[in-house]
Length: 151
Image (cartoon, rainbow, N blue to C red; front, side, top):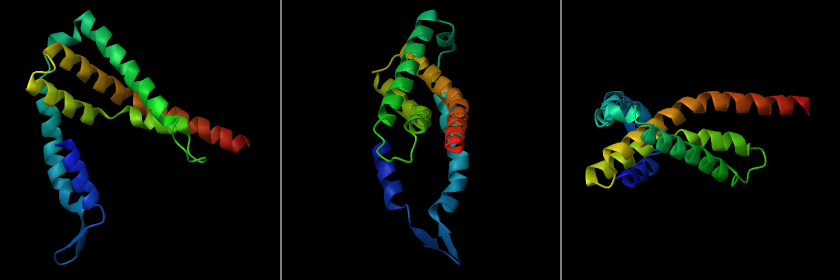
């Protein structure tokens, strides 16, 4: 499902639709986005059992998968071949991919592969990675700007 939607996005990337004037797909889809994205997050939130946030075992698992997520994305950032790009900034930029994690977790829960506890841990990981990314990006970009200015 998610791969299919991604493929459609690739195909429609440069498509313009003509009505009385030309519109890019982003302009046409924005109203749908504004309606359905909040609904998606509400539906994901409804599935979380709140006692998961109080269970120390689930919190430990959540912290573990959060660290694995952050470290894994930093390791992927090492694969950047462009000399002008900062591997650290690219790795940090990839940390917050929460909506994709929530989609997979939701499908896993629906199929019975993921139980309520693991789903709660994944939601905690998504929250943590979403909150940690902006300040880390700000820090890493400021750090790069400082090193560029000092050269």
